[in-house]
Image (cartoon, rainbow, N blue to C red; front, side):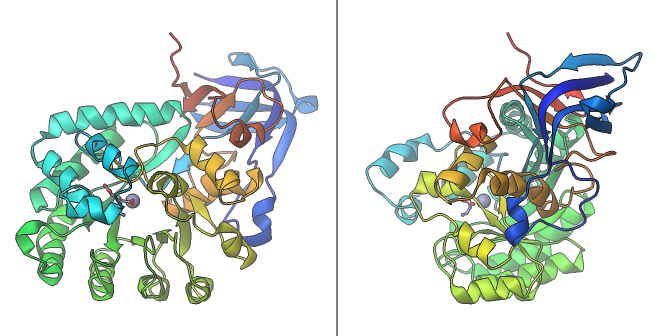
Length: 415
Ligand SMILES: N=CN[C@@H](CCC(=O)O)C(=O)O
Ligand SMILES: [Zn+2]
């Protein structure tokens, strides 16, 4: 469908070509065009401008956007969207005050999800995951990273990644896949993390590479999960197959994992709810992208990533949902942006930059999405008539999205 949006109240994230992430003071600048038009041809952004430059085009559907804001769809660079069942059974434990670690010690947590996954066929896993993907697209997500990590065996990890790859094939939005594997230690390894990392690197990774199932690798670098040495081994194994690393680190403790990742210039370090001055200095000496996951902090009631510290140190910041059944049972990027403002004290401009253009760099799709740029995919959010774009994170309890386009195709089919 070729169309032109006209009378757009404000077109956000207009960048001719952005070759670097947005960091420090630059994050406060959100480039916009008021009273604008936007032209979409064959699913691609082909042109845009101010209304006083608009000329009608035959064979293009004209869509009036009076009073409405148009922005690129959210980019969610950290999710565990493929999983079996859910963990609502742990919800009451959490309400009663059990910590993430205490729930895991009771047999809940990642191992709980792993047991559910073992019992779920690939076809059923696909159907469950497809519904979640449709839901997050309707909430404005237009590119998404999906991790394995609930399989914990070669066969089950590959089952997860095959489902993610099938979603990539059957949907039009950019999907990147990450082999997590080292997410939790299966009971059968009796506490021997080194032996499990052998299995992850020597047995699982070659099979996953052979089937081209992963774009990135990941590991949960955390006390009582995987240590510094395990993390270095996983990163090195990823380098061998040219798979950049996106690492879960500094969620509950800072014990040298972030330093290791920064020294390896991994693509991203994700969580960072705990961040020391030393960690900040290591980040500043690297090209590694810091990724914050505020809806995980909200759900687990753990600290929020200190965004102002990162920004004051002239660092970039990325926002993602961490959508998973245990620590963030939500893929709503609008809520993530609201939490970034309300709890992390990011301005709307900083939060929108972190959830669009910077997030695109964090999953290496910056040439496809993340900004209004000629030649990028027409993955767009159209709001209902609202006063300003700040209304989006401010009015956090309502959905203000009227339409979502993926490759120029409308996605919200109103009843
Ligand atoms: N912390 C590690 N992994 C996920 C949680 C996984 C789960 O609890 O199912 C996270 O990013 O929060
Ligand atoms: Zn995660």
